[in-house]
Image (cartoon, rainbow, N blue to C red):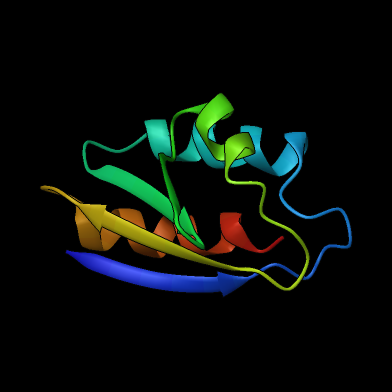
Length: 83
């Protein structure tokens, strides 16, 4: 299991464009990617779930990658989460 965190710096928070980028990037891997913010959790491939996190500027996203290609997936996904 690989984990990393990212603090949202964009004043708009986690909005449609980065959510779509995250979902597309996460679908490229066999590993399961989960994103948590405060008490909410969503699959990184679920657009509606990611929007439902209601992540705002200053919030911390916790990302968990678990599966056969978890290390490579986590390293590839880190730049996608720069929001």
